[in-house]
Length: 287
Image (tube, rainbow, N blue to C red; front, side, top):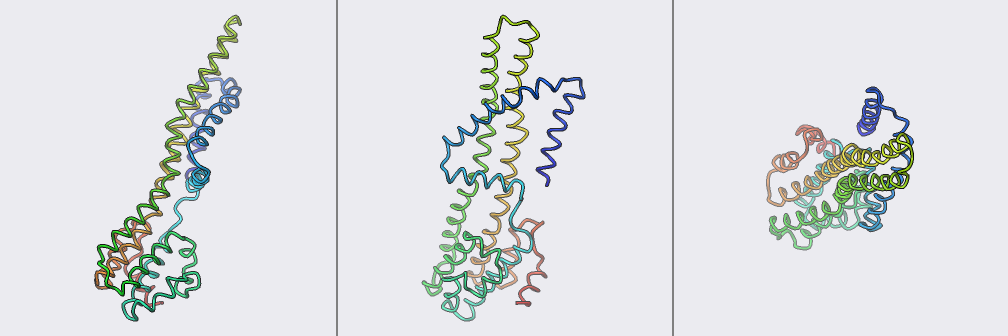
């Protein structure tokens, strides 16, 4: 909702402010489609040159995140704490073998099936299952610090790929002012070919050429740059759930008391999404 509101405010205040101060919007609107064709075409072409098909698809997904916002809310963080705590408790009380059916086939696990939203996140499921599988095959003899290092590498690798849409949008934002200059130069070249025209016609043509520079800067700093910032914020917000999983597993492997394990998981969650201590314990009693 807020990105849409921001776009509306941007357009109304920029163009409305120009008109309110006596500017004539007609030349701007007349040049807009032509300049957008050049700048937009150059932008799309540069994206195709610099990215693979997979990266372009991820970039489109990044744009979707700008408007949808973070995937995970407070209830999801509560759910992931309950999910991992249940598995770790089973491992501690019943032994590693009892957990094996759940981590080998999470889609058919009664424990995982209680959390359908989490089950859809394959990165999250693999992080939990692959880590616990290491513990199972080692019969619980693994050094928790070694497990933590493996989980850190997995989370970093995921983040490296997940953040690419934000990086791509930022690269596009950095290029747009220069692409606007390209459109403006082409407009000047067109104007120079009509140098014998009356001053009023030349003035209109030069004005149209300058619209290219205006659009490049406006798109870069008014739209695409903020889109990149918003996409990065959303991606990093959703990444917090993987750190929550890591904290739960590592604290449990260290043999910490359950209250400390839960607090270790809660401490890394943004305050807006952080379930209270009482909510976690009520949820565990409800299970």
